[in-house]
Length: 239
Image (cartoon, rainbow, N blue to C red; front, side, top):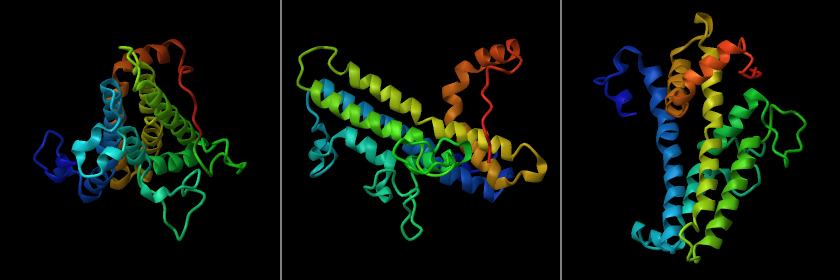
């Protein structure tokens, strides 16, 4: 975001225009800042688990000891606007209000890829409703909370290994809407007629989030793609 607001950097944002920079700044707030902070809050909870004190957030401010770091991770993933209805506001919009954070993004991207298949969603259309990945992530958050609570008073040196594994599962699944977004905006910017600075900026933000995670696999994927004539990549529906 700093690079996008300051044109003096390695990537010359000075030549891409205001619309591009606006998308990078706005999307970067969530994709490049809140996303890793959710992971940190889960790691903070693991650290508290190892220390045997889930209220170790006391140094964060008055009353913060009552808030466990794992709860904070859920809060930063979901946001307050989703309220308490299962499935959040997508499909249950009130007065046009929707969420803004990763939970909402997952529901928004599922509409493009037909992954709105949460088991509690009674809508038969896979392109509307609640995302499967959100259902899975919330289930993992709940499982991790139970695992940490059960482990914290143990004297075993490996007592927090189980919730740590759950943390890795959550972090991995959180990449799904970012990967979907990258694919979507690669598709939308693949031709000059459909390309805009706004779309290019969104592609930049999505790709900047996922590329550090998938870069180690690029060469392996290239070999697979060549050996199988492209059959190692799934064909995803686009809307």
